[in-house]
Length: 186
Image 1 (cartoon, one colour):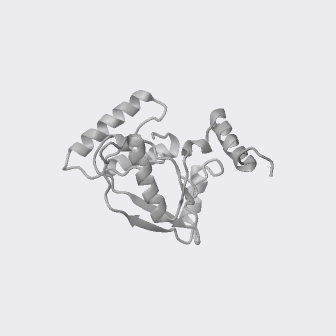
Image 2 (cartoon, helix red, strand yellow):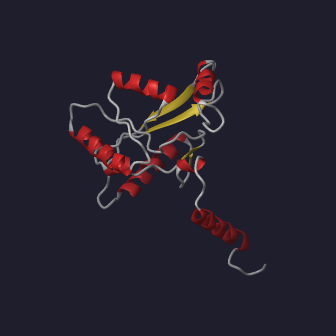
Image 3 (spheres, rainbow, N blue to C red):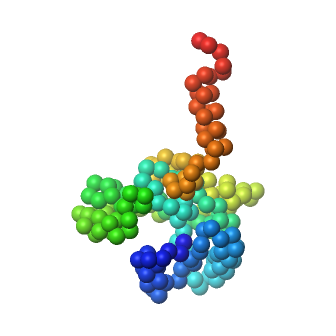
């Protein structure tokens, strides 16, 4: 996603080092343009693989949230990587609702060490009859198992957005079924 301010300066410097595909999440036409660019990139065998974080956000190192399907619609081979940070010497998780970018960077640079386990997993491709969401969920499950993380069915955007009433109602129904059981009184 394109950022302004200090993060924007860092992004523009990164573009000079290696190519990036920046986009604006809220723009539907940007999504189509990004898909087109990604397909062109993977079609060119001379180009390096693309690094994508399909959750679209950072979470607290305990779970894997819903993957965005766009990365899994473009075709090509996925090379999953499971990453799990060890917060013993410094916590790499950035709670952006609690810390601004400068205080986060200061905290990171003054940490004793940032330690993480990284697992490079076998390549995965979309199977016959599998849609992009099913493929994304299969890759997400493999990463969660490898990293010992909890697999969550919801979108990471929920940490910044209001939860939809339909999602709340669904969870309330599931909870009441757990409590009431089949409806009979024991």
